[in-house]
Every structure is written in C-alpha cells, then in structure tokens.
Length: 190
Image 1 (tube, rainbow, N blue to C red):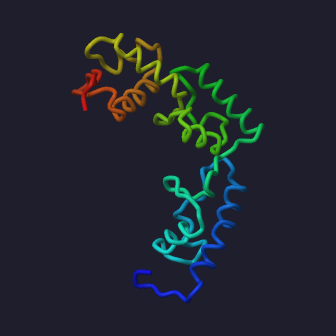
Image 2: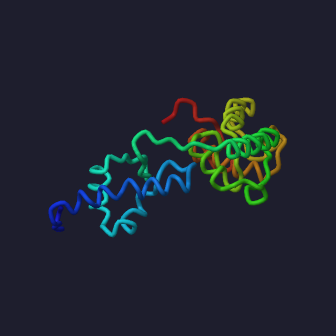
Image 3: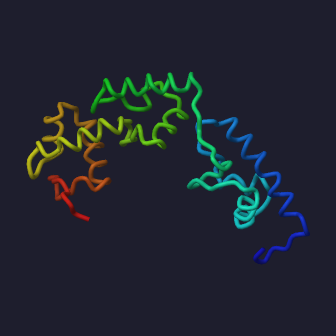
C-alpha cells in the first residue's frame, strides 16, 4: 500500500477489528455521528492512508470527519430529548437576546447534536434557534437599504452585546454586505 508492505491477511484482520472500535465509540457517545476519523490511526496503530483502506474494507462509511457503521444515525435517549427540548424552549423564549453559552446549563453533547442537525446555530458566544435567525433575516428589509449595528439593535430591541455578534454572523453568512460601518442586504448577489 504505497510504500508500505503488509503480510497477507494483515489488512483483512485489521479491518475486521475496526467495526468493534467504532461501535464502542458510538455506544459511549450516542449523539455523535460516529468516531472521529482523525482518532483512528492511533487506535489502530496505522497511518491515515492505511486507515482509509481499512474503513473501506470494513464496510464503514465516512460522514464528513466521522466514521460510522453503515446506516448509523445518532439517537437521543428520552432524557436527552427532554433536556434538548428544554434548551430549545429557553432559546425560543430568549429570542434574539439569549444568555451567553458559558452562562447556560446545556450539555455540550446536546448543543453539538442540535448544531449538527441545524436546529441551533452558534453565533459568537451565543446560541440561537435556526428559526429565530431565519425570522430575523426575513425582517432585515424593514431596516431600509442601509443600516448600522445601532439601527439593528434598536429595531430588534436587543443590546449591543447581542447585535454585534449577530451582524458579524450575517456578514459571514453573506446575508449582508458591510461597507464601513453600514450594512445592506445582499439581494441575489454571489
């Protein structure tokens, strides 16, 4: 394999051991989409190029930076689901003025799961429901052709600590265009 040589059957036996490693990982971390591929070279004692071959031979699938059993879906327990619903409810109530994430009691695994499935978006030190951000984006036209952070802050009745990360996120998502201190909506622009 490239410059590496293996005895007959070595890759097959290494590939046969891989599903058990991945299964143990997803049992321990059931909300993650699989085992981080970057951890597998150390777990198997083989370089990354060999791990690619082993993943393929083992019948596992790559999901972005993760390796998982074919057809695997992260499945929250009832307790996980209840805790995530409570967090979503807090975010819904907070609207565009949530507490900082470091001030909230949210399990990092729950937060990561909600971010990966698109329900929650991290914006600077805050988390917002995707639907809250979509509503905000839909209402940006009410600000006029050009507006400032202060205009957005006043329009949505939020503090500067929320307005600044929100506007920076809008810029990064190419929803708005910044020219000096003024923003405008990107309408049909690339």
